[in-house]
Image (cartoon, rainbow, N blue to C red; front, side, top):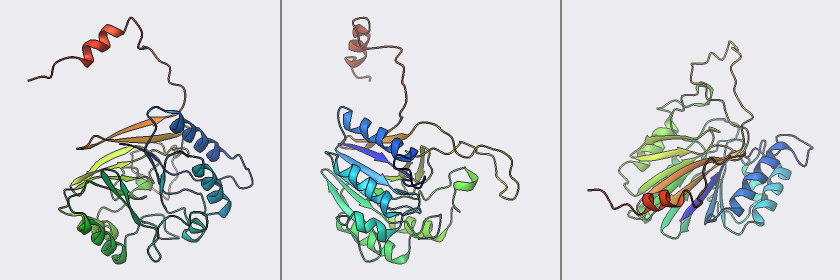
Length: 283
């Protein structure tokens, strides 16, 4: 099973421009996903779908997703607004105030979490959400499960885009997931960069963004003293592909843009490929 993931679209970042750059970046990524072979079985959108929760931005996204020939699962991030989201995506399940739900994806169970606290940049995971997640995980304790959310509950190393490792919401989430060997991965967004870490007995992978990415600046930052460091770059949009092999999840990160081949599968390379593919297994 092949699962594509895009995140941090930030549609509506340029008000009044129907072809603003983030829409163009999203269109390029969707064109790549729909033309690739094999095509994804499923698309995850892991939050910050819009810049400011505007109705027009959600409408633009809904129009694009309706044209896809594979299903899309949506999560909300700190730039989203639940009321406007629900207006344009009424089919997405809700539970009271929260946009969280379970999706059966063939051999996998996907649990989409709501880590949004409107008005707050960082994540949130209250007691109600923790109780809901515990009930959902207890329903299928042996089923391979992917947890999907916007905010990764880990330190990023990028000083202005990280969390306190012992933040209450992180501790609450950790307590629910503790000891659950069937959680094969957690997939997130928010950081605008690819990043992988171990956490809570599983692997968490943060997907790179379709909107412009963050610069990789790991030096400590003093918020009171600007030092001229780059914060956001004009690099191409990116996405992730997660391949479920039946026993584990493999993740690839890819960027758009020109990939100039230095070798092709032609007559010259055929003996090399044949040798590589047909080697006997090692002892």
